[in-house]
Length: 447
Image (cartoon, rainbow, N blue to C red; front, side, top):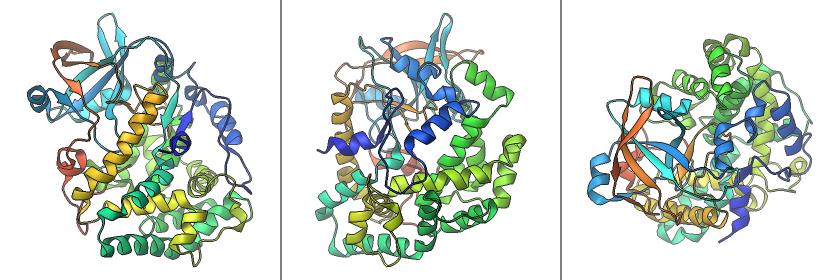
C-alpha cells in the first residue's frame, strides 16, 4: 500500500506546510491558501480556531454525528452498519452534531438533510468516544486520481480484454477530443495566455459533456466561491456557529441540473456564462458579477494541480495526440479519474464494484487508522460532510432518535450494532436507488 497517494489525497487544515505542485504555475498552493483564508469574508472558517467541526475533531471531546438511513429495520436485524463508496471512499456519510443542554443540534448540513429527506429516511445519532485529538486532515476526492489509476492497474484481471480496451480507448478519446481546452487550462494557470471571463465560462460549459470530470471541478470551484464570499444574513448566522452555509451550493446544484433530485451527478453540471450569472444571482445577487472571474482564475490552477504530479513542468505538457502510456507518465491523476468514471458506466460495474471499490475502501481504512482518524471528512472544504471510519478500533455507539420542534435530536433507543469495514451492496446505496439513467448502463455518482 502506498501511503504517499493517500497523504496526497488529504488536506491538512492545521499544518503550515503546503502541497508541492507542478512546475511553471504562476501561483502556488501557499498563495491560494493565504488568499482563501485571509482575503475572503469567510476564510477564517478554514481554520480550526474558527470552524466548529475542525475544533471538535482536534479536541479530546466525543464526536457526535448524524446519519440518515432508509434501512433502520435492516440495521436492527443484522446488527451491522456498513459504509458506501462515494466522496468519503469507505466512510459512513454523516453531518456533525453539537451537544447542547436540551439536545443535539444538527450542523446546517444536517438540518438540510432532515428537511429534504423527511418521510423517506430516518436519522441516527452516532457517538465516537476517544481520548486523543485527531488531525484536521480531510479527504479530497478530487485528488484520488492516482489511487484510482493504481487500483485499476492492480485489478485489470477482473476485466475482459474488450472491457479493458474500451476503458483505455475511452479515456484517450476524451483527452484528445478536449485537448484544446485542457491545454488552455494549463496555459492560463501558467499565465501564458489570457481569455475574457465570459468566453472562458462558455468554453468550460461546452467541455463538460466531452470531459465530465471538469463538471466536478466547476461545481467545487463555484461552491468554494459561494461559501467563502457569501455575506448573506443566513451565512453570517451559520458562520457565528462556526459553520459554512451548505444551502448555497445545494441551491446552485439543484437549480442547474433538473435531475439532481434523482441522483447528485456533477458530470452534468455545466452552466454557461449567462446561466452562471443567473444561478448565482438567484442565490446571492451581490456575488453574481464576480463568479466568472473567480472561476477563470481558480479552475485552471486546480485542474493543473489535480491532473499533473508534483514537479511536472506544466509548460511542457500538451494533451494533443496523447496516448495511454504518455498520460500514465505525465498526467496519472487525471487518467485515473477518467478510467474510474468510465468504469462506472460499464454494464458490469455492479460486479466490479465489490472488487475495485472495496480495495480502495480498505486502503482508506488502513490509512485513517494509521493516522488516528476515526471521523474522516470531505476535505475539498471543511463544510460539514463527515463520516465514520468503520474500521476504527473503538466501536461507536448508535441511537435511534426523535426530533423536537426546535430541530434538536434526542436519542431514545441505543441500537446493538457494530460497524464493519465492508461496503454495502451497490443496490442499497443512493446510486442503486436512483436506477440507471438514460443512455447509460449504470448510474454514475457525484464523487
